[in-house]
Amino acid sequence: MDFKNLIYSICCLSFAIVIGAAVYEHLAVVPQWTAAPPRSLAMFQGTYGLQAQNFWKPIHPVTLLLFVATLYTSWKSARRTNVLIAFVGYFLVLAVTAIYFVPELLAITTSAYSDHIDLGLAERAADWERFSLIRLSCLVILSIILFFGLTKPKEHQP
Image (cartoon, rainbow, N blue to C red; front, side, top):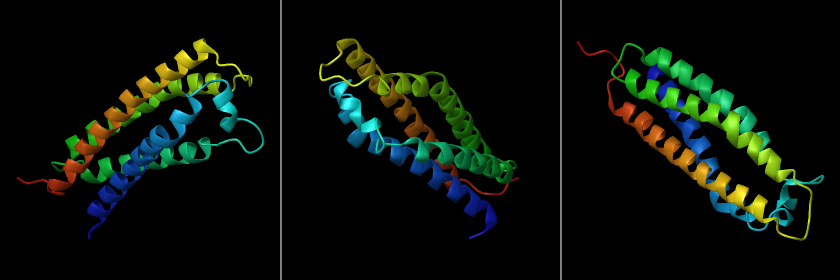
């Protein structure tokens, strides 16, 4: 395997890890914390609360750097369009995540504990989940576009 294919493949792997983690969270974590807030938010609080940011903070910069490296090595090939679309789309998803998803998640998950369900908080959590599923769907589409780039030649064909 040559360097260009290796970089492209590692970029695809990193992007797939991001998506796999998001799918896991939507199947195993989100249903738990959205079940009955603020009572169900205890999983985020206290000394042993879930610290998902320990995964998300390093994976995004690594994946972005791999996208830049892949774009650089694919610039003069038919793969460039696939990489560029996936990279720009991922960057936009991260921007929306920073502007809406992270602040809203922190606002919801740091709510004071109570045994009573807060209907307003439950509605915000449900909205966050719905919008996050749309975000995840966008990431899946972008990953398919990125992976299809592997079927194109790594060198420019005259």
